[in-house]
Image 1: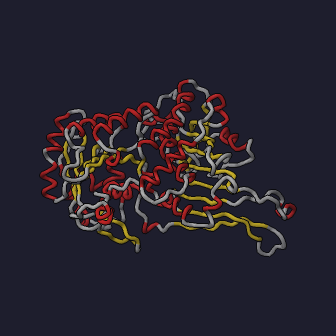
Image 2: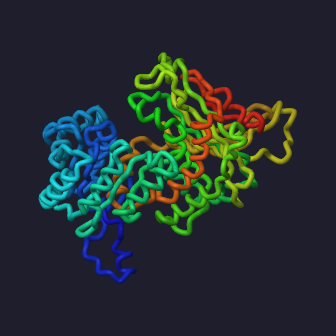
Image 3: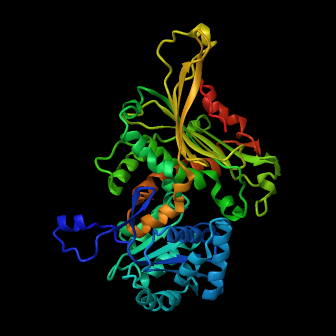
Length: 523
């Protein structure tokens, strides 16, 4: 859980007292193994812990990606014993891995799980259940005082937990590291994000803070920089001279499910754009960092957000379309409309779809439109980035192809299938002069992939902040979005369109492209 290496310590003139990093291999690729430590999960009885965190930890342990000197202490308001918590997590892991579950592995893993009933607003809980209890568990498991506090809780209690952790002295790094992991959303607008950052920095240095955007841990997302900057056939073309436009899509087939309470307050712009979509935008558009280390990469991402042209509020409808799904059919199953979902106000104006056109005012991207869209209850589950290159300057084959030649495109596929493809033109076999668009595709093999949350947990334990959002990027993203939110939610400047569940979204979204002579990639 200490991210410094032996080499760095020597360079800084410090005596290296800890053993060198341990590495294990996944399909011949070395991955650094975290040092001993404790993971304290706030919200351990909740959905995120059951569906993502514990299954990910089990799988990491099964794959020998974790050291034996580890324990997990779950806390929540629900009254449970440690045995009951272990039984609950056993069912969660079996549900996550119905074919890959191994009882023998679980029998080794389960003794590392503990539970403590907790009141997030009561300072005594932090002393009795954490400050006074942790040393005993740390001694038992020989974890060296390294601690990660994971906030898998509603944002409404972030401030209570951060303040009480700090007041109890649990943010201090006297014997080992003390990291705090904060799930999204980080604030609901620029003002609340700044307020939360100020509170966090009352007790924690920025190097201790890990703001999660799990999209950054997906394999294809991690590969964007390597694809761009390690290949000389692509990097020279990745600019305004050769790129016509860029599309970023994050489409879901699911509705709000059990998250109606949160989603009614958030909507698609807060839920997806401020974090996931804008982070994909940054990775697609950023300049190459001098070195591949966390802060240099995050420096360049922040520069992109500083360069995003503020959307003109007096012409907002020319840059933004919002929509809400109505009753329809998704994957052959009838789906209710958003206002029919449990927990949703029957007159709700919350947007479940948004399409946005933005520009980046810098040397590389001046004049190139970036089209962003995300929504629920759409025709398919698909997250991808597509870079559409300019048409050839002069076509030799206008009569033989019956119209404009389809331009080349690179598509980075993030989910459900991770990989990438290159679309280009070739001669149709058996013809004299006839062009045929073909697709050259690479797909990541499923068997060797770490899940996004597995990567997130590993990087937290290693202290590597590459996959996490820095303070300035969070606030810069909100600075772009907050005026738009105010104009939409308070002033109603953009009409709320509707779209049938299972469709490609509202027809109005086409106008962002239509007047430019461009088209969305089909879902």
